[in-house]
Length: 394
Image 1 (cartoon, rainbow, N blue to C red):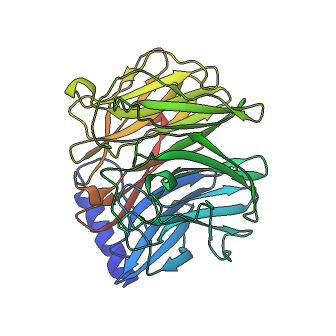
Image 2 (image 1 turned 120 degrees about the vertical axis):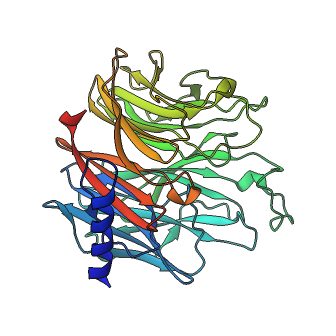
């Protein structure tokens, strides 16, 4: 089976329309929801969800000497909530691991919990535990994980206020009785919760959150939701052990009655921050990037990234304090481009092709030294592919 899978991937690599060699991922057919993470030592990890009949498993692999190593299983279950946009992820901090997945808590379609598992070696994982303690059969997800000191910061969308007592089994996803909120917590390497906060009492319902660590402290970036249904990108910063009042990264003034399922991504080097996001304000689908030199307190003017009509699904990594590489999708094409904080740009590069379907998910990018690693779900092959690109290509 393994040989057949690798052969199929190699055939795909030879027939790909882009110029970069595809690196096989040891993921079985039917795997999806990739996520990339680079630790402080430059070790790259790729996690994904593998499905076999009714069983879902979260697995990960390390990248070493130009290939992905034998995968490790983190957790498995038959009652997971597996969603194309709300993908599990892992983070590593000083050889301590944390990973999360979503598990159903009730019969309602959107009743599920965020479950975390920790490991001291990446091989033996703890019994999964729920990060939130509201006990509601409601939507909890769109998690961000961030190494923070010797601990981890976890941010997530929390739907505890969207259900009313005695109405937990009614599907409120398109018409909440209450608001989706943004929460964050700090856990130690053993998974014990140290602190927890509500960061925003009203947010967009199903856009990914993202986090970054600045010299001033962690920041959380997400899509807000005003009373007038303006859903722009907001930021809150953890400064001197307190969270700042959320503020708009930029006022796109995108008024939309439903969630676009298209969250931001961010990266930081010191107090230099880059945030990429999608908006369709004024019926103009656009990917933008914005830079900050003050740890996210203030921002420059945004820079348009896309060169053609886009469906968003962004990611971003900083190359230095003045430039970043953004990835995004235009139709079925995954593109990437270097953007400098002064507004100058490199040439857009085609990384790969997949499809516009939801099942193709959100392409991922991470940096390891002078290399950028990309991973995506190939919707046609029903598996995960990857490639490595030298940063000087951009």
